[in-house]
Image (cartoon, rainbow, N blue to C red):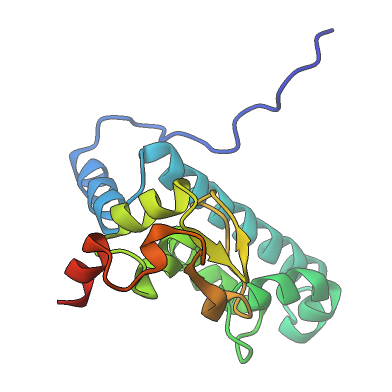
Length: 175
């Protein structure tokens, strides 16, 4: 028996050549600045796992949302901490989530929404090149999920040339 890396963390579509699905995926890829469809499929798989867990909890509680939430307190706390669910949402809201709810919590998207780059792709490049920090810690993983508490701490690294507001790449963003 060989030991090695884990298998992939996503599932590919069952029918690879569906024009409508391909067009939707291309739209999401450009809107969120994803590198390839694998990143989108990972987000879709994460959403599938969240829904599966919510259905399991609701099943154990025999459809009672309060009891299901008590059973899955850690699960719900994690979804709220990452901003996937709001504080008012109950466990049944997890079944209404969309893949965009997952994509909106990515480091790359948060950085773009905070004005780090002019496009999601540029925000990704700044992250990968180590120009952006979360709470002062340099993180170069654009797919990292950002917690609600950390969202306001996403900024340029102080030692980065891009931290200067007059840098040519930032000057264009200010216009």
